[in-house]
Image (cartoon, rainbow, N blue to C red; front, side):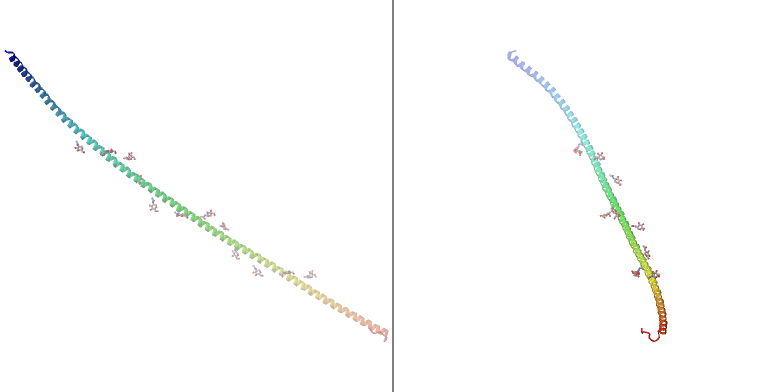
Length: 213
Ligand SMILES: *[C@@H]1O[C@H](CO)[C@@H](O)[C@H](O)[C@H]1NC(C)=O
Ligand SMILES: *[C@@H]1O[C@H](CO)[C@@H](O)[C@H](O)[C@H]1NC(C)=O
Ligand SMILES: *[C@@H]1O[C@H](CO)[C@@H](O)[C@H](O)[C@H]1NC(C)=O
Ligand SMILES: *[C@@H]1O[C@H](CO)[C@@H](O)[C@H](O)[C@H]1NC(C)=O
Ligand SMILES: *[C@@H]1O[C@H](CO)[C@@H](O)[C@H](O)[C@H]1NC(C)=O
Ligand SMILES: *[C@@H]1O[C@H](CO)[C@@H](O)[C@H](O)[C@H]1NC(C)=O
Ligand SMILES: *[C@@H]1O[C@H](CO)[C@@H](O)[C@H](O)[C@H]1NC(C)=O
Ligand SMILES: *[C@@H]1O[C@H](CO)[C@@H](O)[C@H](O)[C@H]1NC(C)=O
Ligand SMILES: *[C@@H]1O[C@H](CO)[C@@H](O)[C@H](O)[C@H]1NC(C)=O
Ligand SMILES: *[C@@H]1O[C@H](CO)[C@@H](O)[C@H](O)[C@H]1NC(C)=O
Ligand SMILES: *[C@@H]1O[C@H](CO)[C@@H](O)[C@H](O)[C@H]1NC(C)=O
Ligand SMILES: *[C@@H]1O[C@H](CO)[C@@H](O)[C@H](O)[C@H]1NC(C)=O
């Protein structure tokens, strides 16, 4: 064999060998790639399933949270309603207390009016007492005046008695004087008679030359 032939043969063999090896290698590679794709597909599917499960769980969790939020809002609203009721109760109690205070004030007013009326009644009684005392004093004054009138009448009577006595004394004196006058007259008469007798005697004794008196 010529050198050229040898070279050609060598190249051919090399080419064939490399082709066989290449085909084999490609086949192996292809098989590996196929396997990898299947695995990837399975993995993708598993991932997708996991994701769906996670999402469902998250949805569920969220729904639960939403429900819990709703429950809490309901409770908050119930609390608010209760607080409103408590406040209304407080307002009512305050009103009741104000009503009580007003009733107490009204009662105090009544008590004061009663006291004022009692005071008035007492003042009226005091005035009636005063009027009575004034009347008693007027009665006393009148009695004093009556007593003074009596005293004066007694004095007038005493004066009268004295005047009567004075008149009696006067009458007596007059009688005494008349008696005296009579006695004087009687004495004068006696004197006259005595004188007349003396004269007669003298005339009889002296005769006619008797001087004239
Ligand atoms: C999760 O909720 C969303 C919207 O609320 C919905 O589109 C989706 O389908 C839900 N997912 C699952 C797995 O239920
Ligand atoms: C529940 O309430 C919280 C705060 O109150 C809020 O941040 C959250 O988004 C609410 N959740 C839902 C599902 O409404
Ligand atoms: C409702 O009131 C109760 C007690 O008064 C309290 O413990 C609770 O936290 C309140 N709830 C809300 C949502 O305010
Ligand atoms: C309000 O008063 C009523 C009766 O007076 C009572 O039954 C109720 O419990 C009270 N509410 C509150 C919140 O105090
Ligand atoms: C307070 O008095 C008013 C009228 O006098 C009455 O209408 C009201 O019911 C009373 N309130 C309470 C809480 O007793
Ligand atoms: C009590 O008397 C005062 C004044 O005398 C008056 O202003 C007040 O309204 C009265 N109160 C009541 C409840 O009658
Ligand atoms: C009643 O009289 C007393 C004393 O005399 C006095 O202190 C009181 O204020 C009077 N009351 C009224 C309501 O006038
Ligand atoms: C009025 O007089 C009576 C008895 O004379 C006495 O008991 C009463 O206290 C008097 N009243 C007043 C207000 O002075
Ligand atoms: C005053 O006198 C009259 C009659 O004389 C009598 O009726 C009256 O009771 C007397 N008054 C007093 C307070 O003594
Ligand atoms: C006292 O006398 C006067 C006049 O002499 C008479 O007017 C008066 O009424 C008398 N008083 C009494 C209480 O008798
Ligand atoms: C009684 O007499 C005296 C003096 O003689 C005289 O002053 C007096 O006024 C007389 N009284 C009466 C009541 O006549
Ligand atoms: C009357 O006379 C008597 C004694 O003769 C004498 O005591 C008396 O005072 C006289 N009365 C008057 C009022 O003169």
